[in-house]
Length: 528
Image (cartoon, rainbow, N blue to C red; front, side, top):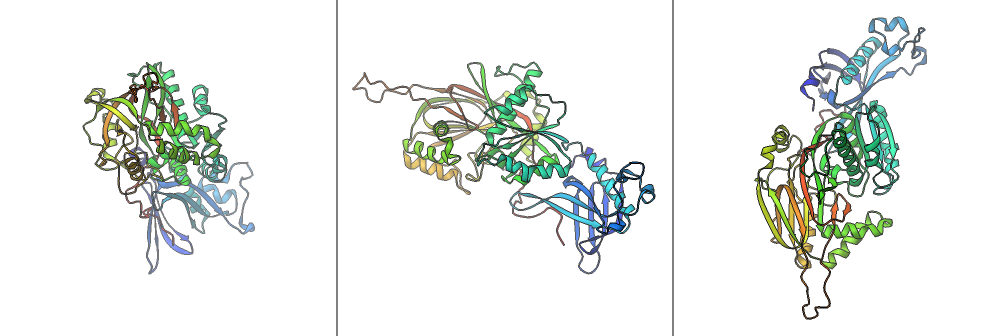
């Protein structure tokens, strides 16, 4: 996970013998890697990259007669003294040090672990601690000061509890300063980012669901465009990238984006990724109607069934996350269909096959290298589809979550400059049931259903068409044209006729991505 520039910082070489869990171990530190080997018959060897280390702390002697105060008689911190002056400043006080690090667990989770190394010479302990701390401070990608938004109302309304018990302790441990803002209303985070000062932060994070994350990146993109003099209402504008990276800590109902980033909705994993500072590029999609920007979205925009569900669920917010199941059942039984026209600029890559977007994704890396080539991104085949649809969806990511392990489009990529357009024709209830069962399946997807079409596109437009009169024998009983709304990252957009355009890797998000060997524990550090 370390870049070349990070590796060049680690010039020192350290070698010594420490006591680790009552076993003598030879410990090496070179080129940003800690290695310790046990002595004796039961040989074990452990490797810990410094890129996985969060912090290092001294261990003090429990014997008070051998401890010294934190400062010498001149008021200087003993920890900051040169090793040669340590014993002259005060009696021995350091008996070892503890490394706090992130260890890979099963199912894409990472955990906070510790290892303590003890030594009889406090000068050796101080030398190791200072060297490791100096190397950690040289990791420029790690955030030092974060603006953190906490949504106390999202999901199960545990945002504040998540912050106090699971987020704050780890940030304090890693030495990250946080400016915490508790959101009080819809668009609070977006409005704050449009007007606040960025002088004292180097990253933005949020505790909440997909809606809270959407507020954050909408505020950042709009603020950056305004500061750079770019008209965000121009659907063809080249948007400047926000300077700050963004982290999302799960605290919502489905946490789709956190799942797509990390392969899990585990809170500690998301916090550790922010601390360690690795990031990847995320496509964002702009939604325009009548030359006016409606919103940017990161996960999915959907017309028809899912639009009806989010519109209906607004009346039942008191039910919490259960409101989506209730409204979903109602709209499923109603089986409404909507006339419309979809026109898309198709990409040559098939969305129904290929490797999934995971750690070190070759497709996303290729687009990151070529994103400056705007001409290459504008080519494609125009395709138009007309009909009566049960649902039309544009998936910017796979939209996988705990309820839908494969998501709407399993082979969709985070940063390839494309959106997967799913066109689901209106049909009978049995087919709709097959569709929903496929969406919740771990093995199957919806692509082989005869009433489903999927296309990978760089942009697309949708136009609602008037519904025909169903009963011509009674001309006075004219039907109101059937029009749905758009579910845009869980929020209602009322304009039916829209244009969607993908902005390749517009946002950098804190994550190390999903790993393919998710069932194995391969952190490189094991316990004795």
